[in-house]
Image (tube, rainbow, N blue to C red; front, side):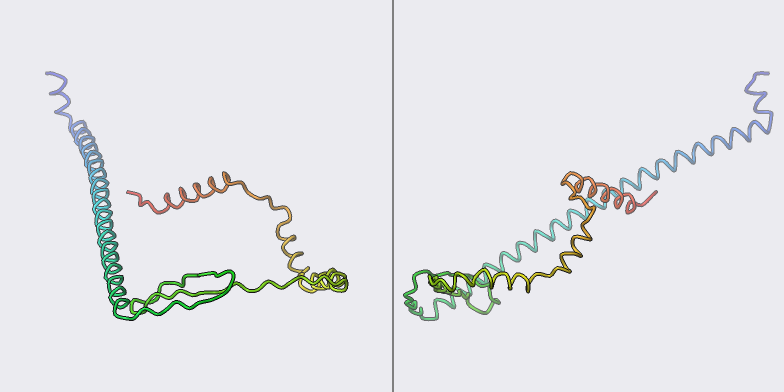
Length: 185
C-alpha cells in the first residue's frame, strides 16, 4: 500500500485537502475578480474622459461658429448704417477705453474720455504752510487705530509661510482627499 492510497483512505485527510483546495480556488477567483473590476473601471473612466473631451471640442466649435456668425451680422449691420463722422475734440490727451462686448444684437461701443485738466500748483506761502496742518488733521481723522490694533493682535506670533511650505501643505491635503475619495475594493 502506497502513501497516497493510505491518505485517500483517511476521511479527515481527504476533507482537509478538499477544504484547502476550495479556499485556494476562492482566493484565486477573488484576485481575478478584483483585477477585472479595476480594469473595467479604468476602461470606463477612459471612455468618460473621451466623451467629455469630444463634448468640450464640440462646444468650443459651436461657440466659434456662433462668434463668427455674430461678427458677420455685426458687419452687415455696420454696412447698412451710414458711417457717423468722428467728433473733433481739441483735448491735449485722449484716453480710449473699450467697454465690455455688448449683447449680440447691439453694435460695439467705445467710450472716449478726455484727460482731466491738471490744476496749477499755487505758489502762495499760505497754502504751503497749511498743507502739513491739513494733512495731519486728515491723517488723524481717516486712520482707524482700532482696526490696526485688531490686525496687529491677530498677526502677533504668526510667521509668513514660505511658498515651499504652502506647496507641501497643498500636496498633503490633496493626497488626503484622494485617499478618502478612492473606493476600497
